[in-house]
Length: 455
Image (cartoon, rainbow, N blue to C red):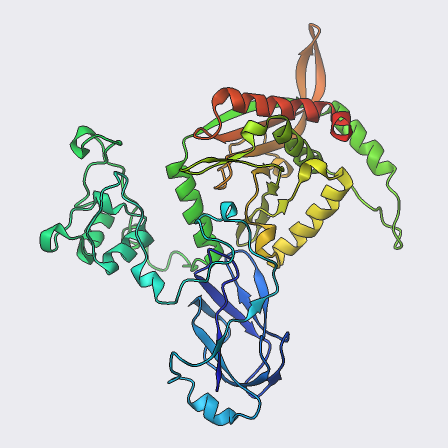
């Protein structure tokens, strides 16, 4: 019996993927463990291995195809002794009872539920391909049930529109597709209401996003190049919009004196041994000290090493620090696990490896999902200070500016000092102002006294 090869789910939250490349062609024999294709997710390009032995009878999804739903049949494998041509000819009409194999990705077990934006267990099966059509729209802000058509729910989800604010024109007030089209242009939207208050109690409506047509109408045709979004850019947009809209965020800024850190860094790098190629075994950067200091600071202030859920606060035992890495096509935050117990040299070498594989889109899901806090460093671009957007489900992120010579006052005298500004963004649901101040103060003490990181 022919075996259907399915689009695999490479992470708990993956719904679609791009079939980047076929490494086998029709007629090729494969055995279990052979790499047959490369699948591109929103974060990485991952190799897919065959589970069973046989001959590839038919490739149904050509390489380069984007947004292939999870569990869609992408190829058909003829088992040993089967007629390959017959299996290929019958691929399009394969019955649901046909034996299927889900290719396994070259990745370890998926991240823990707290690491994913949706509460999906690592072992949970992927959604069937038909699920997106019935996907739920954003939850009504007032908790009331909203009657709507499946198409309207899908359109609302794609547009980021709260169904509870849409006036339904269908039977018995049911929200239908035309109501979502009206809502996109700002028509038919109810007034936004605070929890427990009627909609009419507020006097303002949040401005809806402009539609594609409205934006294009503002520019001369031919005066721009339209570059379609890839899956990574869409995911970044969705998560940052969700974080901005759902998290009450406050910011705390301090200036750190880098005098002792710079001296220690130079001394440690000078003492580094050489490998077989004559290259230093490690070369510490200021960012390596920042990662280590943030990891230890979260252990000193454990109440801030948390993630918010509606049911409970998750207090993490270790400091898993995500580090923002800029890519030509977006942004990713690979994670240094248990940063508080790793040496500076280990952090430095691990970060270099993660950054290189991130730029090659070769990270595995458990290497970028989860984390208890993050660091974003724009100092290398000469940025003095900035604020960073928290990456859910984390509750904080540290924005690191450049180290620079500044005039400071010490003992009544103006002197030159190497200073660095850092700004901590905090989710106020999980971290109160005083608690955030304790965390950034603990970080400042470690950065200004780096010897405290090794005792």
